[in-house]
Length: 181
Image 1: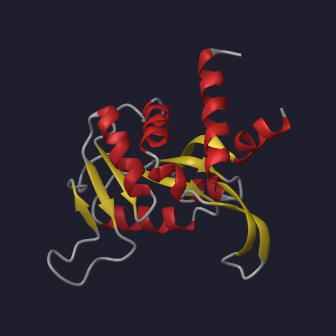
Image 2: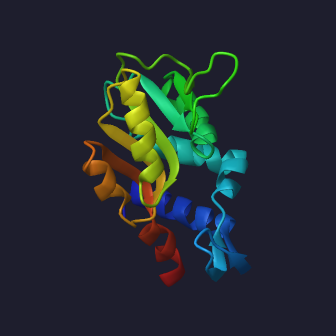
């Protein structure tokens, strides 16, 4: 196992240990589960978030001009990542605010620039598809997205259908692998 593989395995283990909760949880679907993955726990831990950002930095495609973090979970991730790669950020709302600047994307200008969409966790890819479309309407050039965790539930395929390649630091399988070891 290479040093990079060991670092990735250690990161997966630490994220899983930090974020996997047990108890009784009602899911968005209405189902109940005895296990829940609280992604905000790795985003709230500055040391763990910095390790995530360092890993993501290796995946930023050459030529990227702006990092676009999606509301809510993508915002801390994109901010930490920007510190590692020195690129400006845009903070993308789910809907444009109705006051002040009334903008969908705050921060760095996206029009005419090569933008990398950054999300914390991708499941179906739905919000990334929506936000990518909105950013393209603003003139952003987008062909890739980056996430911390791909839950491997169709997001990669959904994004590919819209001309966006998804790169993930970790997958659901990576998080589960340390428990099997």
